Image (cartoon, rainbow, N blue to C red):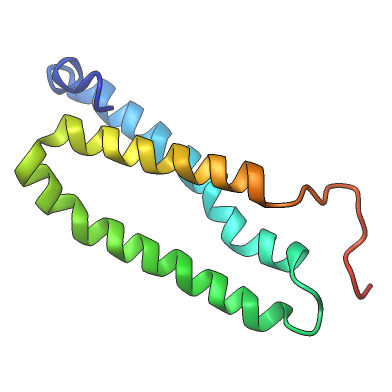
Length: 111
């Protein structure tokens, strides 16, 4: 969205459609990891506690991102703010890819 901001502002229906797609895909994948990864990653003895901590950290990150969004738009503009959001998303992907064990096909511990 940040790269094409000027063009998208000239075509509001397209902007709404593209924004809707980004909203859908950000909730379709990353949002589900808040709930699935703790259930698969943590040992049974602490699974629910650390699942709650993981959910709390996700909400803290959302709160921090929401609180920083408007001031950043005011200082740097919408395009730069969207690019910062993209950079944070890419950083989250990289951290998840390299530091979270792939447990597909493995039985959950304790079952």
